[in-house]
Length: 140
Picture 1 (cartoon, rainbow, N blue to C red):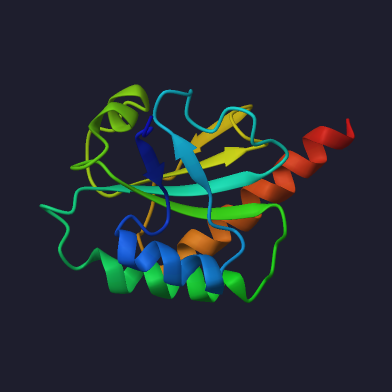
Picture 2: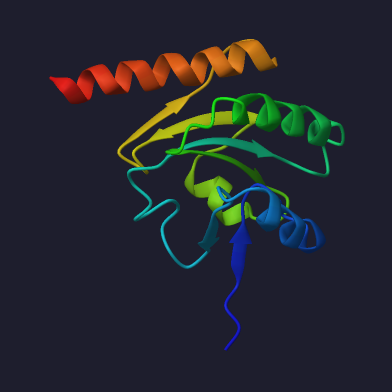
């Protein structure tokens, strides 16, 4: 039986094989399971986009991932979901515009939607700020 799978980060099959060699942080989710269930203690910074509308998003996303990878944060996954292909996930996550950025702390425990300037330094500052806040809350 072949199960439908959602490949996050690299959704094109040819890119998946290449990406798995390059990045151990690629995560595969089954569409029959709740999104991100059972993936704590990992954090996920997720970009929801529509490949039919956002033709120029790939270079931006690659640059964000490469920039963030310099930090080598072992508990962080950088993820992207094409809502044109995986509409059910985007509906469940209440995605209403593209791109939408969300940070999931400890799997699904805490979801934070990014609102701000969509550039690399601002997004990385958002991720780091939220991780620091989450760590402080965990210490209490």
